Length: 295
Length: 314
Image (cartoon, rainbow over all chains, first blue to last red; front, side):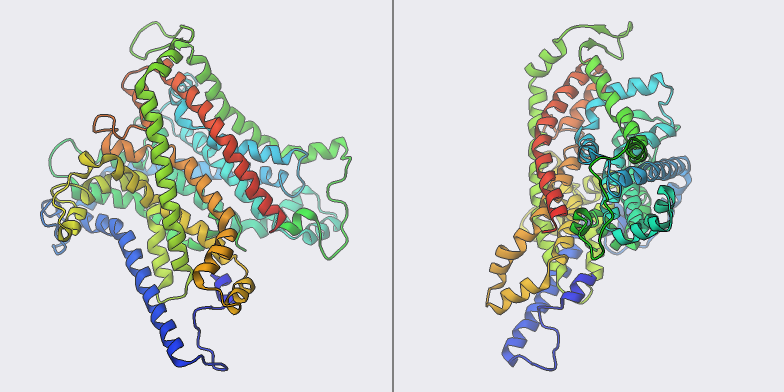
């Protein structure tokens, strides 16, 4: 947001030295109010499904499937209680797979990004393109053989398999992002460190890591989002020992009977961790997604 | 970033990338890259090699005796099977429509959010939320509480406009799935474009204003060209993820009605999980990968442009 603040507001911030003529100013102000209203309408419309999900989660099952839909009802926590009672192992698996794969991504990604930016290898461009290209190969294409491989190496339905695959899934994007953050480290600092006799390791730990750590947070955040939300690999390669939250969510849809409130509660619980983290770390998210393009 | 790459700083530089780097130095540079490189090669490339192997085998889960070589007959099936072509075509349609619409909305939202107004932070928070919602949760919530013909919120909201109890998932299945894809990925596009808008130098905008350029002309002539690399980045990353959309298809329509929403990922899933046809799925996978490589070659060119932008510091 700093960029906007610095740029100044071309719209019409009160400026005491040169007040524009009144009608002009009035038009600008009403124009601004119009933009604000539009933005609010769009924002709320966009958020509506999430709001509806959370609202439905607090309904008793009988109030969830009515026509017209009920907006006033006596809220209950019974569906949440039901959800919490059943999700324990799924939650554990999700947390382990998400954190494990993200840590692995950072451990592999930081040195790799370093080798592609600060003291680049000769063919750094090819290296970078190789990593990106693996992201373009659809993993779905290899799902059958992947299953067979997992079966043979005894990793089927194991949390390790998910950690390994999620790390590979997120690593290319992470390397790319971390590299762009490392490019922003001022050369002068690196030179100064080298003149002080710092080796490669101290250059990384002492100079680069402190500077890129906000970037690493953004990167980790995006890895966490994708790993937490992943379903395709989990549904194909796990059954019970490593089943994650998205699979818990699917299992909460019964074949018959009323289930909409229960489903909404499960969906809310499954989504809330990532939503909260994303809300808190919004700036970080923006930074990460724009590949460090905003400074 | 331009400064870093070209090495043009205020202080005279010690040579950063000498022409002849000695052996030791070369390995010192290569070493940090190797773990990630080896890891990615093993985890992402080996499955594809194995896929290639199985694509020439007849291998069904439910048939005892394991795999045996059967030449190119899996490929013959792929190319003669209309189901593959229609799944491929549907994947293309879904991805293209979702990415383009999400990007158009993303640009519009970013322009809205780039202005100062009361509660901008709140609105930005609301707008990014769909991207954070678990796709499986989004699919199930849209399929049930939102789109259900008898109690869905959308039908209720549309009732004043003369729309009554539409069974969206049976009559407009493909459209419904695409809407959910757009809903989830518009925030992503918004954030990328917003980053672009906020990196736009203010002086050129001021100059345009002084020159009496209208808001629309300024946007078309100055802002849009500046946003181009950001838009390309968004389209590229969005396509990579959206072409693999599985959750929405599996959980909203299960590929149906009929095969109306069966895209390639779901088709492959069905081949493995319902038909137990590992060989056939592998052949389908190989063809998919080859097609992807063709598309990706063009996409990588776009990437190269993004990189040039990044390093040229335009």
